[in-house]
Image (cartoon, rainbow over all chains, first blue to last red; front, side, top):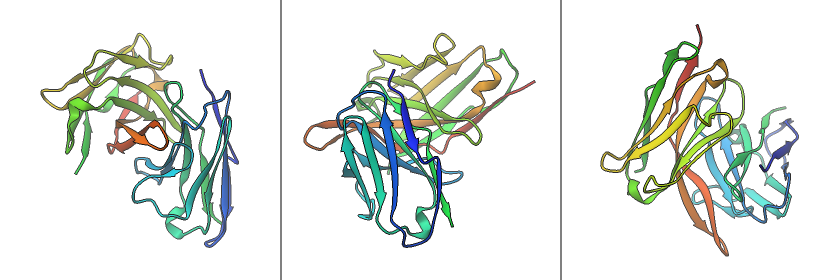
Length: 106
Length: 124
């Protein structure tokens, strides 16, 4: 089974900050990597698919990069509505989620 | 508008059974694979089970294999998860999730719509 890790597990940032979250797969998954955002009490929302493609309706301040085993999610200028938990997910072999990265207010 | 509405959650004793349902609308249900994802209180997302569009193929996480059964009724636009031999560690919000395939120099799978979730609590 493919295992996913994320770092950091949490971070504190201010509105306007550039935020980067890292996701690593236990084996190469090419670009089969998705990113989701989850706010408290809500279902996750798809942000990025195929490692770097923005889902329809997602603001352009979100971007993804990487391939193989190492991936990043970047928020170019953090907005108040971006404080949430972010999960990566591999779709190369079945599906596995990373443990999540909580972004909160500094 | 795509809607996924779960039901059937509740409190059940260890060793008991429960059946979750997910009523789907706003898309051609019979054309899409469907999934169940769960989230224990205060924890991350765990992929539980999947079923192909025609129900002919299923997948289970090791943690639920042999205890949970996923099924669907395409005539009723409904997804099910039959859970038996429940354990305390099965306590979680269970989400019904729609599969999609998105194109980006190739086809990629992702989860584009999620239900609001239904809470299953396993406790004596």
